[in-house]
Length: 606
Image 1: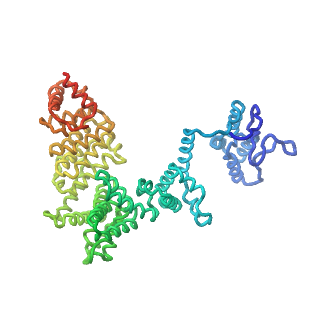
Image 2 (image 1 turned 90 degrees about the vertical axis):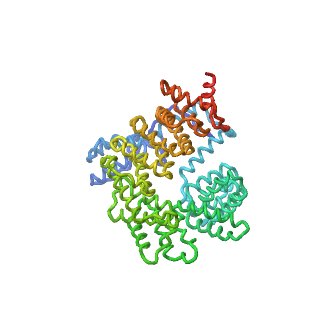
Image 3 (image 1 turned 90 degrees about the horizontal axis):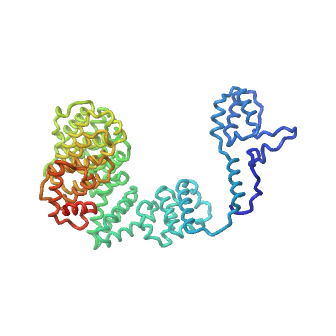
């Protein structure tokens, strides 16, 4: 506290606490009666009087008022319930009187703090608190009239951006409130102060202002052209994020790049433009602008209308019947939009996710229209390939996949179902979407508690997709990684079956994919005995000679699972021979960690 303090009394009672209306409780009125803090208004309506008195009870610290007992009696007399009084007085209690007593006791005991310079660590703590307070309470609407008030740039803004922490606060707020004009102006003002490189390092999340975006775009293009190869992916990611934040920036970026095609660096800009288009295909905001870049006769109102319809499907939380009806109708008419618009991976994924959603019940027409759009999408993707798609076969495979998952849900034995439809990639993708939601979705916990009868069928579907569809193996391995912690120790047999399914990638020679899966697996929190089960399963499948990648992967799994707990015949016949074989392998630098090196060293030592 800074300044002179009032003399410290021994104690203050709640009746002596001053409020904005003056002292209360310790004074008497002209009649010699204690003055009530509650204004009394005459009313003949009991309900209105109860409401007025309830408002009194809800005032902060109402229970500390001198005449509270009289007020309670009055409330009960007009039909109020004592229980209501207790609840309101409890909820409205703050304890201002007690707080003041504590502060006065501190002052009495320790005296007043003197004004001193803050230490550096105290300044850091204060800034951390204040900046977080601003982040939590910032209201963009409060700054809506900053420029119309005629006051110019606020002085405090200039002071704020003079130090790095202040500028970081502006960047964080801009990322949270991207449509705030004042924050976009603040970033632009920071750029004018010469902090281009710092703003560029933050990336596209603060590029809401178009001038800011333009300067960042030029800087990032220069960085991309001159940077080392290992940094290109990071810079590309930042550029793609910037350019696809909305349709306008995507359109602008594509037009600028197209204008540069005929320059000496045209090849570079063409490559970047193609990568940007591929990224935008997965971006719901920018994709509808693709229609503007169709060449020649393909640029027409039909294409624009189809692009906007596809964008509407991508942006919606669920696929609306009207959108897929409209899209189907457009492609059935004589003058159809370009099929190139349908070659959007995000569109196919969104339609399959809705079609195979476990809890969603689609009407017959809704379902047929979604299947029809998916068929057209797949046919357009495979047009011109050596094996063009058969539209009828695709539709039949999707229907069989839907019937299969419906049968599994209702208890049909998977052995009675033909799984040949999984040879059709799009049908397998639909089943994968269903599996993912079942095993890792919001309702997975309830499913594991009540739907265990479907687990053998789920394991069978996973293993079949692993065998038949190489593009989905990585996705299924990710599902296994996510599922194991959710299952916990409740379903050990199913967990082991999933581990066994993961080894299918080794049968198909995908050691790198298995290595990536193993790294993710080791970071998950679940029963380590499952890792030991996986190790022994792999060792029973694969024999020497081992590649360096495979051996290092398995060694990391062995140490992560607790190799000392592998004993008996498994240790003698599987683990020890593998470790002996590893002694003959020349591993690359840093291929093994300290634990793996120690394990091999212990083998050499006998």
